[in-house]
Amino acid sequence: MTDPSASLQPPRASRPTLRLVLWILCVVALLPGQLLWLWLVRDGRGTATPDLLSGGYLALCCVALAVYALLRTTPANAIRLPRRLSVWIILLGAALLQAASLLLAAAWSVQVARHRLEGGMWLSGLSPYRHPPLDYLRLDGPDGRGPDGMDHIAPAPESTTVQLPITQAHNMVARAVERLLQDRLMLDPAPRMWPGAAWADAATFRRPCT
Image (tube, one colour):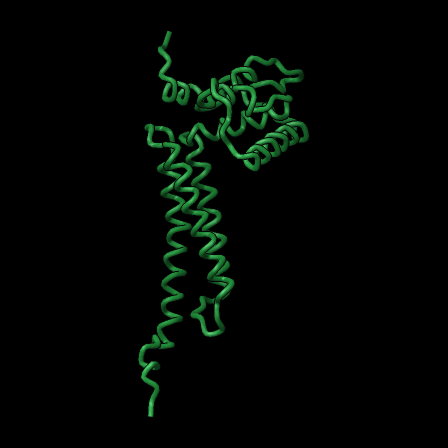
């Protein structure tokens, strides 16, 4: 006699196929999906919104967690790509994302400038939770350590920050590393009008030309 419940079990052959489909969906969401998100959150035509910026980032984080779960639960009979092909996919995907970030730098959301500015505020002894960026923009720090051209295009300079402390720690470390590299490599700080600042200023604040 046969067990009636055995007929209710999914065929074992279909489980590796289902896992492969899940892998494909996650890869498509992480690579083309992240490229699409980078394009949508650009600020050139006013398409970047806080909901899209935060919601897209949260969705990509969830997909990354799904990939981690797949890695932790991969069985011995899973369908696998050749190791060399997997390495090339990872390297080329990372290079593509880096290239996209550089190409979209001129049209990137000005929120990036806001994060950079808040990092500079911490290094200057001002808390973005207590002081609006306007207080920092009025500073004239020694050795050119005050605000520069990129800081002046940050959005909402009259408002204090709402970012989490972990984000503020990242902002401060990133700005400190930037200054360290400027000192070690003898690089000039961002000028008063860095490349694209005039466009971003006009697109964001709509200041009349004089």
